[in-house]
Each structure stands twice: as C-alpha cells, then as structure tokens.
Image 1 (cartoon, rainbow, N blue to C red):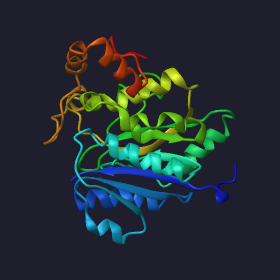
Image 2 (cartoon, rainbow, N blue to C red):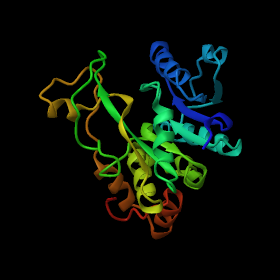
Image 3 (cartoon, rainbow, N blue to C red):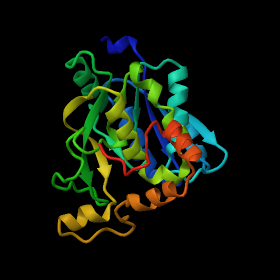
Image 4 (cartoon, rainbow, N blue to C red):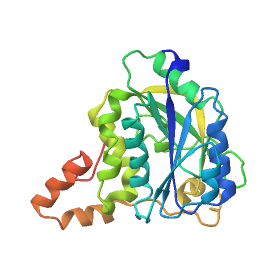
Length: 256
C-alpha cells in the first residue's frame, strides 16, 4: 500500500468547544507523519475562524443533541462519496500522536485482509497529566473500541451511515452500539500495539477507580437502563425500524 498515492481524512464533529481545545485537535491532525485532510463538522454552532485554516469546514444549521453522531456521519458520508482511501474519527476534545495514522496503516499492512484498524488510547487528565492504564475498554475488541481509535478502509464503509441513522434516543450509547455493529458484522480489526490517541478523560468512574476526585464537569457513568426503558415502550413495528436504523437487534440489552 503506497500512502503517497492515497488520500486519507479525519472527521471531527464539534459543538461549543473552545478555541484552544479545537486548535489542539486540529494541530495534531496537521502534524501527522502521513498527510491527511481534516474535515470539521459544526453541529449548529460554527466558529468562523476555522474556515481560515487549511481544513474543510462543514456547517450544519442547527444542533442535533445526539453527541455528535449526525455530524460525524455526515462527514463520513462525504468522505465516502469523495473516495477517500481511509477514514478516521477524532472528537474535538481529543488529539493524536504524530504517528497515529502511520501506525494504523502499519497495523493494516501487517494484517492482510483486515478492513479497519483499532488504535489504543491513553487517558489524560484536564491538566495534561497521563493516567495509568485503566480499565475497562483498553484492549481493542475486548469490551469496546473508542470512536477516536477507528481507522476504516473502503470495504468497511457500508456501515458508516449508521452514525446518521441511529435514533437520537440511543445516541448517548452511540459509540458502544457502533462498536457492537462492527463486532457482529466485520472480522476483527488490525490492532495498533501501542497508544496513539490522547483521550481527555471526563468520566467520574475512572477517577474513582483510581482513588481520585473527579475534575469539575466530569460525567457520570452511562446507564443502559434509560435506553432500554425507551425501547420497552415501542411497538413491534417501531422496534423493527430501530433494528434497521442501528443495524442491531436491541430488544434485549446489547452485549458483545
């Protein structure tokens, strides 16, 4: 695979993140050792300065309250239509090591026949310090793969539209539902053997597992019960629609 003749892109949905956070994300993409295009998708709150940077800037005219799922999917669908050779995702609050794309391509090259890669992430506190390796979800394809860790090749693109079609009521668990979709529909990914994604940790339970006080703004653990309660209200016809929109049978609690 000759990286010099192929085009790769990174999709970043953003909402109301501050300039410093967005710059950190954008600069990490610009520093990649394998050149990539960066597509940022504003979910209803565009920041005009982004259009002055060497990136592509898509503006959605209203927010969608779905954790960036539609914005992510719109960017991915544009990249598919424009025949990019590889597509990665990076949320606005996270950033890559310089070698991230190169490492994903190397993992794919070393595993012939694989059609997507799973990188690994390191958890970073708001002050920039790195947390010790934490569980759960840090062994790709064990329990979860974080959205920021995917790198897709074209034969996996047929599943990317589910970011757009996933019902809003399920969007809080969207990353895990998408992981389950890949788990059940595709062969295992090529795994990058070392962390290349810097993940801003704002999950309360991770800090408490380490005996630390969660930082201001930290979020509670996700609980599937609310999503299951919504599913339990649906008619058989509506459940079939959810199955088609997510690619998953969700009449029971999802599990890998």
